[in-house]
Image (cartoon, rainbow, N blue to C red; front, side):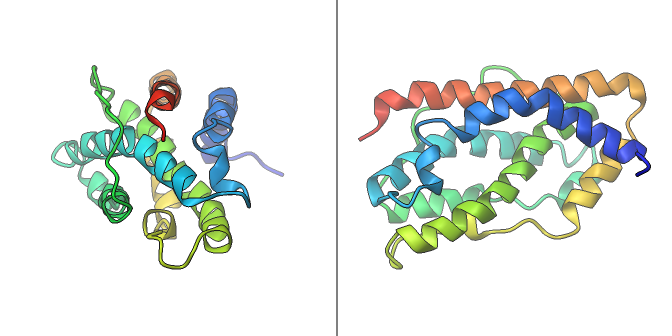
Length: 192
């Protein structure tokens, strides 16, 4: 198999973020999302914990649309997350994004790696939600798949970065995962 430059960027990102990605997937607030024992309380706690950083990250991305026209292709999902929480009678756990993650295009692509990756995980979660939870619970956030062309589009943008920007891309992706996991850790004290 020939290794293309695109696959090198993606492979490097996956390897660099693997440990923190595993912490995110296995976090006590998110792990129940793929369990047959998922119930309304665990589901609501997971959404409340996800909402703060997810919404802040998406707003940061959207704020860059005037600098990078291709960002307008990204489809915002935080509205679905907020709607699901409201219908469950809950609100996001407190979250503050202290520093700007998005200094340039490379850091933007690093953050988008996390956000877009969450869409792939959402497809697995959506199947479990439909099996484990009653039909009347809102599930729009996890049922909103990525446009099929977006992963290729993201990869095209990442591949156009100069090699000198790859460290910034990796750093931004890792920092985004770290912020998410840290928020989830703090959110444990707010769970019901």
